[in-house]
Length: 383
Ligand code: SF4
Image (cartoon, rainbow, N blue to C red; front, side, top):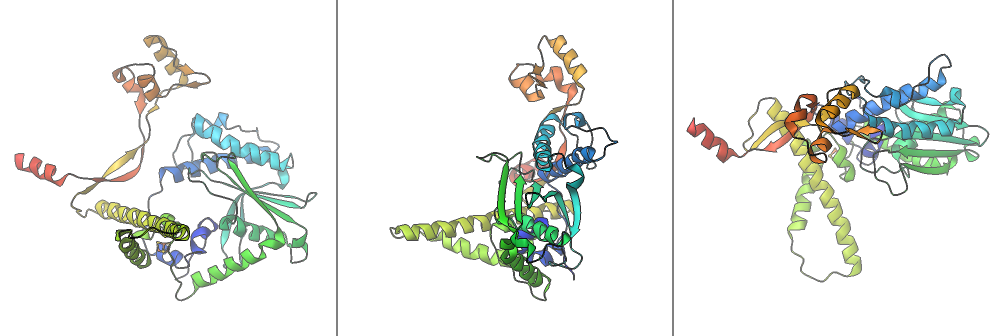
């Protein structure tokens, strides 16, 4: 079976060469709310940046996109508009007016990793005067992703250098500035994290990538557990993770019998951090599996599924909100924005029944819930 080695999963398959094969053998998992928002943000960013590149097109701003529905049926709101604005402003600063040379959602091939392996780079720009290639990736999750030694950015750098025909001589004079833009993560130094190196200094990383890719495509790729398991779709059916879980369980079940030295403390904390990731990954994997089985109609005692709901939001436009405000004698505008439905209830003290006809909650996915089987049995008995 041929595998796919996408750049966005390189953090996983470089460490665990067996993950692409195993992930291909399990059913696809529904995208999380965060992933869907990420897709919407990428769609918006592409539209905005490309509007600067086509002279005949009107420039689009994030604010103007509010209320628009993306290809994944999610609607752009003010918050996501502001967040995408952080990314597009940064990219426009890098391009510094040279829009025709800015590559947006650019498809390249990374044949060194695997023949025909396509990658799509969010944005990159080669500043020939400074001799710097800028690569940027927009991430929309809350969990911090660093640019330093980021395998996705390294793989993208490899594809760009090949595309530009930069060989082993030229790469000694060119810098690669790689960056992650995360408008929703609470990073101490702001939403942009960068790592700049000489292109030639990436050669060792390219070797590691190509070796990992060769192993992943080989006859018996090896699995290895670590924090990357948390983002693996196969974690519910992975023998390596199961075995490691067993070892971790035995380890943490042992009582601490002695006063550890500082070195032992350091080691023990490392082991426990690993164990924590393994336990978390196994739990998530089993939850995904249980959701899949329950959806297929299987019965799991004590577990059920429910729709995951978004926060409450308005179903009406701003003019209607102004009218509601007049009717209840409160200004529903909070600075440039409007109060959310929950703020109207909790901060302005308006009874829910007054606004309930104008609010809704979207279904954002499925969650596993614990069922009280005793209570259920009692209910059936009473019937
Ligand atoms: S769960 Fe972890 S060890 Fe198992 S395939 Fe996925 S990444 Fe590899």
